[in-house]
Image (cartoon, rainbow, N blue to C red):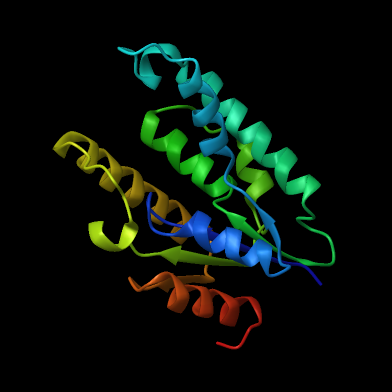
Length: 184
């Protein structure tokens, strides 16, 4: 039996921290692929450039989608195991919608019934997130729009979506493990 569980939510909500903890504790996990792409791009940026200055949005989204498909395949998604994913292809679709990038029919078909459960992390307060920078008002509004688009995409795609409330990392980890072990 497969048990593919997605952890999603806004930036700095503890998703990657929880995924790392689960991995250390022996769970099969898939890291976030978009962050890996962004990290690689930022290394190549000059001092006065932003990611938007040097990245073609459509090609970037295609790259993220392809890497996500490969990561999921390599890490056992849809085998007889439990796999916990830091975001998923649904996030890719939501970002494409937000950015006005086309979402192909093939991608829509791939995500149907791909995941068994979605755990949506509510945003953490600035203090709880451990973030060391503050976003501009424009960035904050963009983050809210992306978050809204992502939530709506998951909600329209999956009935089995569960909200994980704003708490510390340890209580969230406990809640996630309860969902993984189907104790809720």
